[in-house]
Image (cartoon, rainbow, N blue to C red; front, side, top):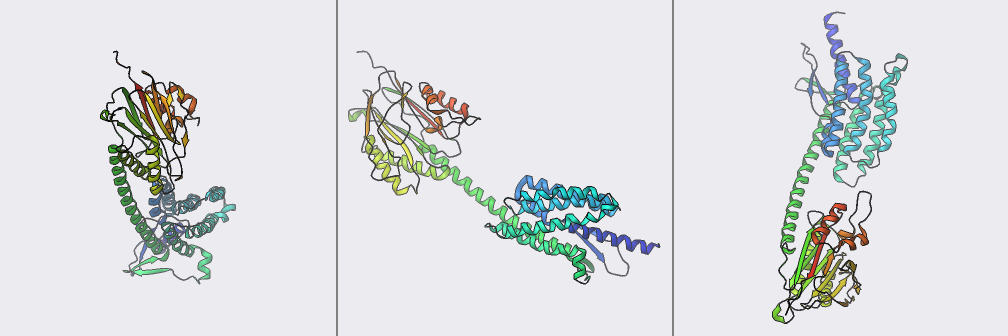
Length: 465
């Protein structure tokens, strides 16, 4: 074979290698063959494939999957370029399976595990190509992956998410172009030369289409990443504003109350909590003195719950100037919740402790307070925001000197350990005799699963006369 014939065969083999790689979804290598009389060898211009650009969409796991896909396809092309046919066909079978996995991940197709059923075929062909009698199986992975990608594209086009549909459209263009590398398609198309001339260089349609599809898909990702970043910044600003509001509304330091020792600990489970409490001294000039204590838990999480907390705390602080009746305070809070709750509800307990130890309590579906390790039996009303006709009956008790009353939210009772067991009412009752800090620490050690708020009220000994 003379030198010119060897050069022509070598160039033809390189172009065929790239077309075969495209049929298995390999990297988009733009093979440019110059058409002038002084024929130049094929020049490979590396660029990202559609699966490569799509890997940006789904984070680190998909990016790692794409790297495996790209590395396998690239290694196969090097082997084919230097004449290693069996290793090339073996790696091509694996690359076909990786293409299907990448397409499903990029379009976020749910319930796609069925595509894994075909991996035994890919692995069988990966080994079979080394045996001459089984060499007829070399095209099986490409044909199977073409069918599977088509099914995934149809599912992607049916997605309710516009981004997934746009990616499916990009894959659809790639799928049609990929047909041109199959010999049966070329025979049906009368062996037409699927290439275009740009600047004197011949670009196969498969390569050009994959390049354009990859660029279009990358534009989709850049737009989505920019939008996601903007949304995250907005959410972060909203959370920061919510935290600032809660820091103002939830007291860090409890005011000194003559005749009582009040302790409070508040531990939100997330960045924004749904628990709230207020400790409001009763003016001694009014003739009774004492303290008004409010504790509650808003349904839901995050910013909506934090906004409801701000509404309720503002309502309580306003009402405290006009009434010290726990039942009246709860009734007014209920009306405010009905106007603004949007289907949510709030449990709340209002307690007035007079200077002489008399306790007056009204409850709206909240956990009852614990006195010396036992839960007080109260008249319970419905949580706030459910019914406008709810009446909140007041219950009275007496707190003796040096005795402790403990109020808490369900974050203590619903603390959950690794086995899924709850801390529960019995263990919470046993803990209720300890300090507020100790109770919270015990609940967190058991397994915090919600916001935790604990208030303890101890009546100090009366001075000797």
